[in-house]
Image (cartoon, rainbow, N blue to C red; front, side, top):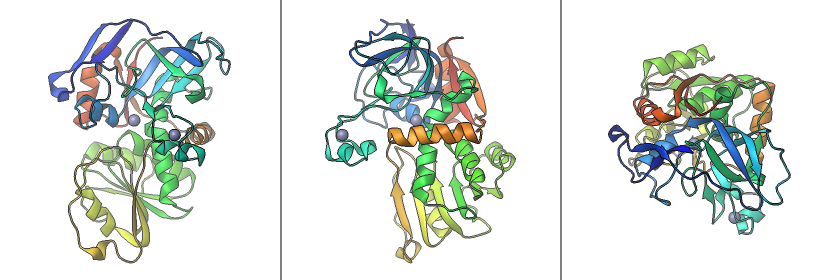
Length: 333
Ligand SMILES: [Zn+2]
Ligand SMILES: [Zn+2]
């Protein structure tokens, strides 16, 4: 099969993904072989490719927002039929036995596997995944539209949940890429006012088109104090600015898997019971709940589509903030 393979983490400007022929994987017991139709490109892929996440498998095929169809069933697999459309997300599998898995927090599992990081992902024509960690894709979504729901969408949704924002509340978004452009649609559906802070004028424009009450620069103070805010951009220097925008008791959620160091800041910014918390991965329940909500609303994603062989171009565009919405690789019809 064709795949975009990462041999050594490098800056994306050096085009480190090699479009090459590799062996098609075989599904093992309880796994599915999925023929990839489309795979979203996420900032986490960028962190894997550039080595900001320490390498766990080498070489590795990145990509963890796969929409495809079941090609072949491993022994004992029975949840989906051959030909059925499915989605594969970041959480490839958990051990199911650690204290976190047993207490319903499988996103914090002690021994997780991650798609496109510790196991091969979807920048390829085929990928395998355990059927129990595969999602049904709601009908009516074109493949490319559905792909960004699987990480940008699910993580944005978990971030919204952790922000404890209520209907009628005011919510800040810092950074307005793929995750934010999906999360704002959920927030608006919940009747939440969104204030978008982002350095890129195109992203500010997209935020306003999607119903933001205000959009401004990353360090511009929003015109009203916020009940909660989510930082999607991986830049630690945003944290003090975002805290400053919060009301007393406000919650600041850090939505990324990687962030540059957070500078020190006066205790006043945190005092009055403001809270900072990170988001790590998601549970399958988050994914299933989100996909149901996404279909109800229905969420419309803005995507820029690249052919699989141009994955380097896609990750460079993502790094340069050149994509309003989400980048998606089209792999097959
Ligand atoms: Zn576990
Ligand atoms: Zn992701």
